[in-house]
Length: 451
Image (cartoon, rainbow, N blue to C red; front, side):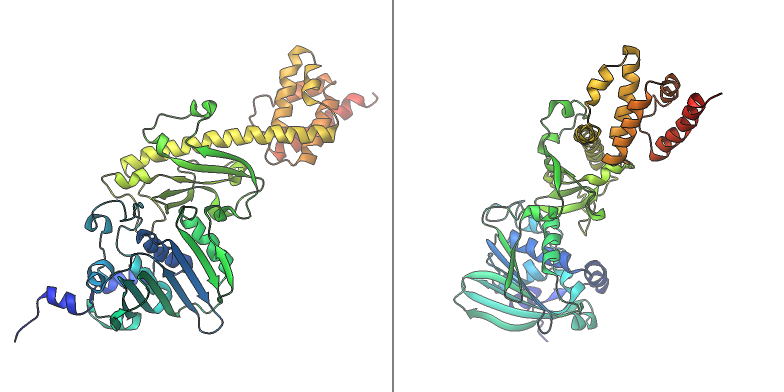
């Protein structure tokens, strides 16, 4: 009996070859939440040079997600090698790091399509190129019944349509039951990309065909009141002098924000992006960050140069780099020093602002008061005041009370002697300050009480 060659089969029918464990571990288990799945589809649209991407979230009846773009699309012969092939390295097969339109290619590992099955049991793909539309569907239940080879269901082949190009992916039979939170999904997508402010790339979320949200990069910082901000590469000579030499320092772009309030737990530290997509969640890169002040820091850096390294250091789920690599270790060292330098600068700036607020409450110029003291006591007074001002555990009112107390008590020699014992402490905790008050009250009572 004549058997068709693989090439002829490829031209006549759609085939996805797979391993069941791959579907389970790289699809169903890895992508159980909605935003990462949508992020994978948006990444595909970006790589297809789409100018517009519309994400439709419909939950008035059966839950349904539709992502529509105006990218290049695919013709029928391209579906097997470009879409259904699992593990396809787009950069190697398509000849480089750039898309046909000149965008840095985000996709690389060729497994993003498996993310669909993490949240949906039925997927329909409609793709048009040169006015020819091809539509097929994929059922998770049917895939898991097969052994290594699955044939998607063809809905229409090479149908002449008015639309010139573009792809629409529909996710049906969703595993979730609750309604969609469009604002939360928008923020999650903003945290996954740095491409939403690019010219000719507009992404919108449309909820139930009425509420529309246009995505922007800074949406990731929504609800974070900015107090200070630093841009990278760092140009501040004072900060640069504190940093180690690093060959890629000029290629790291982005910002660190110091918030007026502590930031959400999943935003503490700096996130890393490569070619516009997240590659490492927020972190401090070896800095223990035990001080309360680190809870006010968040930011994002672009480190796209890592994509040119010989070793692929980006994990499959793009949530963390491989930090055991020699090159990533050097990167972590530099990032740690950058964050430490900026934390110290933040602390200094916050201290200056806090000092001005305290002076208003106290009704006195603190520097003027310390200068009025004998020279031998000025340093001790400044150290006491700075320790209180810089203590992250003390609010303005408590710090003002303590400074007023110190100012009034400094006339007692016994207090000055007691304060000198704390001269070498970098930061006085609440417990130390309260103990100081308690101990000094005992001393003061003894000094002032009649014999």
